[in-house]
Structure formats: C-alpha cells, structure tokens
Image (cartoon, rainbow, N blue to C red):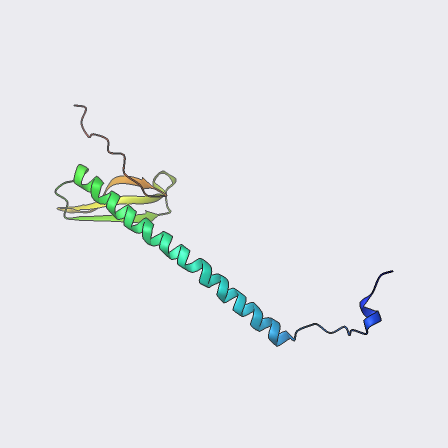
Length: 115
C-alpha cells in the first residue's frame, strides 16, 4: 500500500513563493562567495609575495647592480607562461632575467659563464 500526495489533499502549488526562493538563491550565492573569496585572495597574495622574494634572489645573482626588481604574471607565450622576473638596469627598462613558473618558487640559478 502506497500513499500519494493526492490522498492528503495537497495542492499543486510550490512549497515556497517565487520571491522567497529568489531570496534564498541570493543568500546561498553570497554565502558561497564569502567562503571561496578569502581562499582565492590569500592564495594570490601568497603567490605575489613568493614571486617577489624569488625575483629578489634571482636579481641578486644575475644583476646585482639593478635599480629595480619586478615579478609579474604573464599569460602570453607558452615558453614564459607564469611568473617572470624583470630588472631595471641603467638605460633599459624591464630586462628579463628569470622564469619562476606558474607556481612561483626558488629560481634555478644557472651560472652565466662556463667556469
């Protein structure tokens, strides 16, 4: 023996009104954003700081006399996709010195000469 909704006399109308459902959708969307957004922001800030520290290390090794050091995230060329390190040297702006990767870490410092 099974019980159907018709046996209890329930109507066909929805449980909640359209206005209340829309309000619940907005509240749930804001709650999900409130949970996800801080994690995304903390991850981005951590990557920016790590890339800057790694860029300072690479600049101290490859260009000790550089006036400025900049780490930037680039999406252009697949060879340099991710974080890249640039230095400002006298007479030149933004001279590329190291690729730090999509997730920045310690740069691979390769000697410039064979000795």
